[in-house]
Amino acid sequence: MTTGSLRLLPPPIRITDVPAPRWDHVHRLSDDTGLLEHARYAIVRREHGYCVDDVSRGLLVIAREPHPGPDLIRLAERYLAFLTHAQGPDGGFRNRLGYDRRWLDEPSAGDWWGRALWGLGTAASRSGAPWIRREALTAFRQGARRRSPWPRAMAFAGLGAAELLRADPHDSGAAELLGDAATVIGVPGSDPDWVWPERELTYANPALAEVIIAAGDLLGDEALLGDGLRMLAWLCGMQEHHGRLSTVPVAGWRPGEPLARFDQQPIEAAATADACATAAAVTGDERWDAPLFQAITWFLGDNDGGSVMWDPDTGGCYDGLTAEGPNLNQGAESTLALVSTLQHARTLAIRSATRPSGAA
Image 1 (cartoon, rainbow, N blue to C red):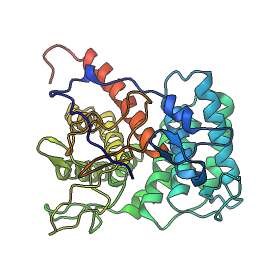
Image 2 (image 1 turned 120 degrees about the horizontal axis):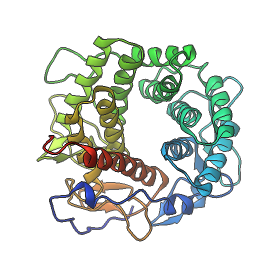
Image 3 (image 1 turned 90 degrees about the horizontal axis):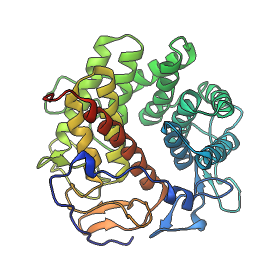
Image 4 (image 1 turned 45 degrees about the horizontal axis):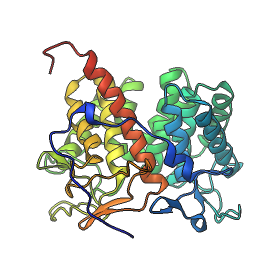
């Protein structure tokens, strides 16, 4: 791991200070097989190979682009082919492929299965290329026959199902998967000091709240929607530190224990942005814009380390925020987290520009 201290962007950060999403480092990490997982600084490390987790994220983020050019469409085709190659006949997915194109595991329903369905569901509902939508839907339906005992795997899969339901409210298979995801995650508790349905906060926590929100909204369950919003509001409160986003670090948080502040991961800030954007879209409540903006500015230096978390020369995102500064390696997961969050920033900027004068 390589760390270093970078300049702090002078506060306050405005929405007009936020850069547009860039794809140059995503292209740098991609080849004719897929998306390579790791880099040292900005240079890809082939020896670590590929993983379905990151390829799925790549497909998802490209599918969210409103007007992808030919280069991004070709990347989406490559990522989709990778995922269909990783899928087993029972709907499970392998996760790791070596640079020699040999799979290192067998199909199963771990987190990568859920992330694959999230990417496939998003591509099936949002891609501007009809041939991508068709193939992604076929692979999604095959994968959606499976279930996972792991709440985060089910949350990721449920978010893919939610994408399909927004496009087709009559999709019964997607509705069933989304409902099952909400059931596995559970509902918040009655203790106001620890609302979360689990006894610890680990990773991808916002995705759990987001899928409960989506299930409540799309399945017409107002109580469930309220549960998801309460979970997310509590989590955002927990993650706010001195007016900025301080994500749950790698070591996690547990009730009654001091809250560690490092190491923080870009994917956690991106997950917070995703969940707050969904809450804003579902409720129309502008109060979700504040934690969304905190997630955006986390990348720009408004974080516990006061460190800018991306490299303007490469467009890549640093792999983590440590007590000594950023981990300067620019891998696929972190770079896609940056791109995803900047996509939300673009939407927030449009919404802010069209808001009536004097609105909050």
